[in-house]
Image (cartoon, rainbow, N blue to C red):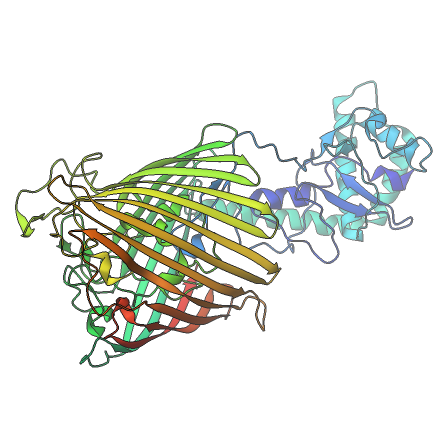
Length: 624
């Protein structure tokens, strides 16, 4: 009888308390099927027994390792800088629960039969003491293993239940023979029980200290600091190689949940990249590969903002390492499969999952070209500064099908456009003003998983710009998208693209994208249109040579104007540009990585006169 009495309520207490504080990893001596279940093994029969969680924290081990990743109702990729894939779990999740459910009759346990050797013991504990729990699928799963400490924890929980019955003074008192056997077990495991109770006291003391000193009960802080050395050679004719640069970017993200199902993201950042309105001080301007305005170029690194040193809303300058609000976004579920989001500082990549494994400004691809499909970057969709005010929805149609869409306005906070001009035909608020009157974008992504190893993203974006730009920051032709047309000419863009990742094995993935951007003058007095195309293929290696080390090889064509009509002109000295990149991320520790890499530009900016250009990067990333 003694060996069965341990299958009682509360033995899970020491796991459940830890699970309430932080995710739990399994000890070698403890098998954990889920966080809500403690599993013990009878020392004589080796029968493994489950314990209910009703008597919480009667016994606890303070030596359980704690996972260094926080669980969230909304999964946020903080390592990838700007929380690139919002994937909230719906309010009425249909996923099965692993929590134990109290049963009132042993017949409710489908895997316990009257012929089982433990049937009578389980029946007594269920129907007399009410301390047996089963899984939601009505199974008991009685074949498990445990240590002496775990056995003592179960015994302690059983004693607590017996004490409850005695204290209530009900007619259904504990049997005398049961008490005698419990007393014998208590004497046999006296040392272990004392140790466990000491550990409970220690954990309670530690918990009290954490609660007294915690930053917030609703908010978590995480951050990333990037320090990188960047050097380059090549560029435009008659340009000398720029000096080696040392640059940085620091981000702090505050994630707040008010209900446990919503999320408010507040992001602060500082960087020392330069550029301003004319590109002065930027690497690409030194190479002669930047547009005359806003420093758009194919020679950009992945972690550089699209408009470094400039508030593009008002054309005012931003000082090096000045603190800015780059993210303010609220996400909240409203139905089983539907989640809404809105914010005044947001990016397209916040809402749309990155299909390619090369995305990760601080961890993966070192170039702006390699990280995302250009359609996501249209209209400043990935400016790196939270340029747009945006609102949209996430519709999780099924586990294999997901649809998301948003509307973004880049100058929603301005009541009207300034009348003064910075350039002919261009206001000092070049992106317009108002939630619906200025430059804007409507974007959507359909994500499909036809199989476990294939992910597909299909993108569409419709944009309106007050000025003649693409807003991607990817190539110098981004500025003056319609060549030969005035800078102040408004344009409309229709952009389509697709990204595919095929995992050839658990550690090797083949990924690529294709995109086409159709640009038309949005003025009755101008007839002009042009088309840009881009594509990329690459192979990604996970845990290459050592666990945690990733590598990538990327090749493709940056955005290139393939045709023009009306007043738009193709230009001279045209040549198809190509991009070749390789990098290797070394995981120094859980919080530090170093990524050496380089990318080579052939026919940079689509101009045959430009020399082949090489950009080398040594990036160190700290996450906390």
